[in-house]
Image (tube, rainbow, N blue to C red; front, side, top):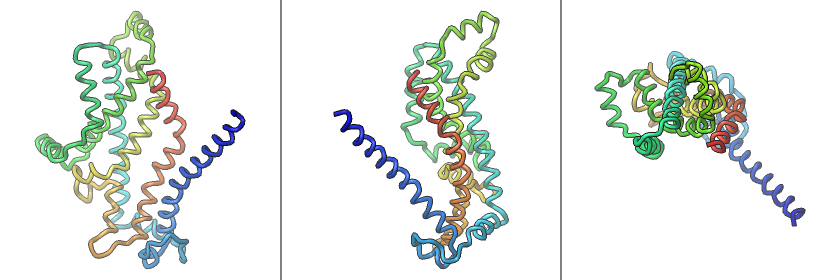
Length: 278
């Protein structure tokens, strides 16, 4: 029976790999072929190899559009991503450490609020009102705080599952050696979170860099544009330049795609270690 099941499992696994690969490669191939066509051929929206291959010309035109708006958008998105993810990692690790190490009556309430941050969708209008009251609306620091607030729940849950696996004896040994709370956390505990930190950094970087909704609502204005908002450069009510639109999609997709491919093993290791040890 086991000998008969092995070919079946191998076949099912092979089919799953082929289907997954097709689901990824087919859309990417469509984007690539559309980005390499001229305007007239791309307007047909056909999945075919371009008659006149002009990918490089389209990419250059995308970067030159609206006074190099895409370059400004890349700078804004990079600042937004680096600052947001850094704050998520630091604050998320600190909150997760306190929740795991200090037991109190407030822990169930805090855990409920953290879970609510994952379940309940964000309210746009009240958030805009709060940001206007604080003078942060239409500013990059304001959007950074919004991204941190929306991504902190996932970070805390992931960090806490991993911190629970760290023996408390390490804390006690550091305290005996004279380490204070900040030194204990940043010099002893924080370096041990390396694998889960890589997971958080990659996952949240992809999410923040590719975020479309939050910059649209909370950071309007052409000078404040992020990479996802540059897609509006080629869309209008009367006409859409599909070859430049897909060239733009290709340009803004490649960095995060390469980053994910490079760190995919670390992502899986960080998620599974937290799940198993938590």
